[in-house]
Image (tube, rainbow, N blue to C red; front, side, top):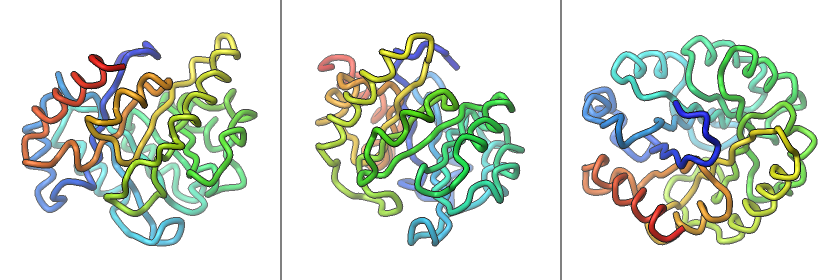
Length: 227
């Protein structure tokens, strides 16, 4: 996986797929097109919905060589973070709003050689993460409210990405990447990339019609052509 902070990475969210056949589907995913697989872990507390846990993630890893991008939408991730680290994903992202100990958790993930991600909800000021940037490898800006699949993109996220990107640039030597998640499609991906995001989570736009590899080729072309 490239460490170039400016390289655009695409991370399709498997929650938009048919999870009953995701192992079979994953074997058809083209690693030349798909950089990461985004896994939304929901606990029914931090967000209303339930998805899957560490056992599912370990099983999915057997079906693909594509690095896993684990997004923990769970309360008190400090209670179970070690279980998710066992699967050695490319990234583990926790929510700023979900814990009183973000710096400690992020440091633990980073020390394990895993990309340490910190996510913020649309209602959380982007400034909330500034003091945590030294502990963070990636900030995930939610462009929808977490836990509700299929919501439209919130345009205010573009300004939030720009503000965070400017702050990161001011902190020389701090290679924090920006990820964005929620409602991304061919019509808005270029704006998101131009604002400063380099890791793009896509849901319905990736899986609609069934040909994820072709869908992601078109999304990447849109991002590069218009950004």
